[in-house]
Length: 135
Image (tube, rainbow, N blue to C red; front, side, top):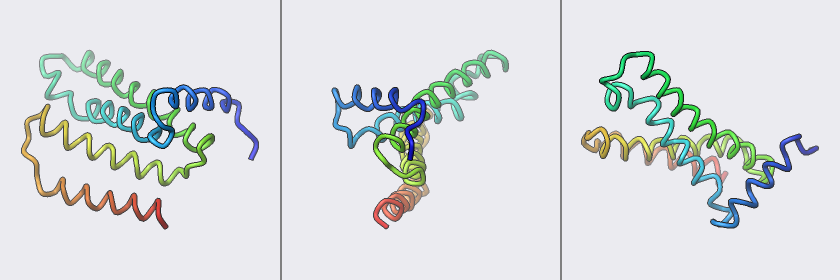
């Protein structure tokens, strides 16, 4: 497969990341950061911004969604093009990261009790990652 026009930038991203952390952690940390932005963008409007009118609230939430895509898109592209990871595996990893972040944010920021459904969801998604990665 011929390298894309973004290959050099994606290679630089991986090389820069590798100066601070091992390469094997690459998809997990940036996807975790993207999951934080996603959770806050999707769920925080009525809770964190209840005193804002609709238009400013939408702009803030869009800014958070921009943070999600700023972290997620280069990570997915670099993991596929440079590290040779599969897209389905990355999507499953991202969903697991999102669920973990959602559980933490739900308990500590939104002050909701930990439910059995979170544990069951985490176990099933972890199993999905195992099946996607090991099979």
